Length: 400
Ligand code: PLP
Image (tube, rainbow, N blue to C red):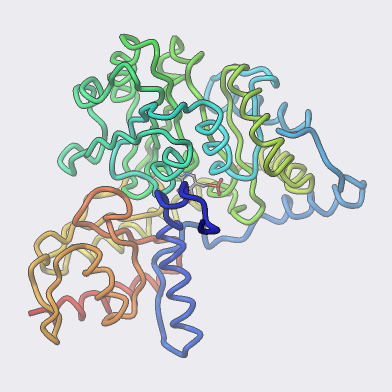
């Protein structure tokens, strides 16, 4: 009998974290690697949020809290949903966890029975399918064509739903494509969901505040209030407030689900850090004026990265509408060979080639369920973006 449980056989460590780790390893061996694999803003946490954490510690807020969030934070989250999303949740309909990732984990573990199906539009954030598998559910991956803006179309959703479908997972703006659903597009999906009352929706809105070209944000329970009782609206402070290390995510949803999620959390990690919870209140209730300039900074980087990438023969790239990633298409390079003759047969091969030859770390599209692509993160300085894409251009030129 082996030590490691069979349930671990079906999942893998996060590929983006794996690439980042490999880049760090190469760097510590003295190799000058530029990493475009990070999934976190390169901005610091704003000082007023840091100060709120110090103040909480000085007040002695260093003890266990209620499992799924302090009353004060739940109120701040409910206020945020009302203010920014026109969603009315009572504090009893709010859950707080150690990141949006834990929220999603709690929700799926609390609801999936073996064989329950979860519709996951691809490309998807790497963790969705693995969390479904850990919960013994069945991911039903629906490929969303680049020509459709990498977005799920109502007809494709209708075809994917069966009697066993428990959840639809949505993510807008999307990691890895930056696709953003418009109000009309969400209304189209909602129409299908209204015909299937057994399907619940988990919408991951973590990139809500990183939108480009003057877009406005919409979330499905706000677009179609009749879905609110079966929607879990997930968000968090990691991306908007540059608080990835503080580990706070939250959600609004139906009370029985919120209670079940608290039960899962109570037997795993208990409450999220009391100090981070206090800091999150400051994030949600404090000044919001830095959000737009930061999104604009990402937009400037996006524009430059697009310009440079599109000048590379063999690469094409759709314009992301939000988040801080680009998802170039490398199909024209599949079948080419490295200078030493090794064939590039997939986006895994291409990404490895970029790491070896260009010393640029990207994440292969296969990790996100739609190939042949690769993801680059623009959550790094303009200098590094230019340097990295310059190296990618040189490496591609060396392909035979
Ligand atoms: N959802 C998406 C789409 C993400 O890209 C990420 C982080 O990369 C998360 C959730 C996780 O966020 P958190 O740091 O709140 O766990």
